[in-house]
Length: 445
Image (cartoon, rainbow, N blue to C red; front, side, top):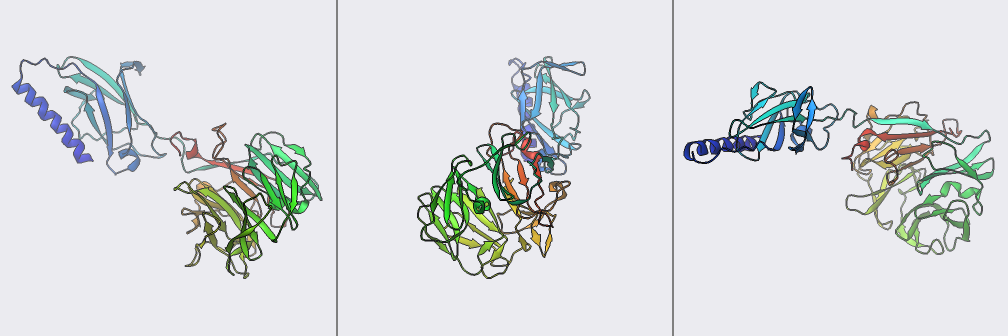
């Protein structure tokens, strides 16, 4: 790339000399327009070498007492910490020019190494060597560390009564917190992302045993040993007896199919829980309890689902199992796994990775965060930039992301970890939330 840029510059010089020697009748150009700017770093810094710059050659502003009628800046800010101390600019113009003066003293040659950490001044002389135009170049670098996660605690509807079961979900841009408080079913709803007050109500038609099995898609679903439940608002529930199968846990809804875990198989219902049929007959190593269930849209556009950790049917650690359709499952741990034997962790798909918080490992609660960049194939310890402050390790926490929220950029892409049990088995009654700095940037996707 650098060689091509230099060839382009010397080609322009050759044309200028050719015209000057062979066409004395042609009027010299008065054009001073800069067309493109590219930067090449001395240390091959990708965010510098790939930066795209926008040229505004028709503006007016004053900077440090000097008038400018051209402004050049990168369209997307470079990564936090990017060094611009040794950068070579390549400038192309819309027509032949006489010369370009950099910072009042340097004659542009195409190979000048400059410090772009401060704005760069350009004075462009047209081919007639008389008409001029001043440009200011500003190379923008993010002032926030794009990899840093910013954590804070938010409001939780605390109670002095014993909590016996808990499930928090994000539905219709609201947080729904279902709890069995001292054998009384309650629902607390927050419309401000756990800022402000929670609205408390008493759901009807849902059993206490169904609280921990609630999932949501287009509506809420749950089950206990005998009944299947549905609700459009989380407050009023309808139920029907579960026919022809014994369900252990609801997993997810894909299109119009609800998938659940049965005693020896994954089963599915295409009629809102009225009837169930076999989807996948699992073996002894398939997870049956203590696992995390995570969903994410794959790069192909299809949804994919993964069961992480937990205990297998044979009592061993289950590893990681994945599916796109609920019918065909793949054991990612078959050839060995880098996932520690964690149970009841909180796992989420976020920023193109899986992140695992808390969980029990070898009889103790873990305060470290694990990361999988390939949807569960491999796992590594997360960096310190991801770690929350004052985080209490828990098991059975609820976790979700507000990635689909469109009403407020302030709350998009947030992770919420709600509740869960501490090492003594008590519910912690806290809400932790975080957002990666990079997700605030306009170019993030």
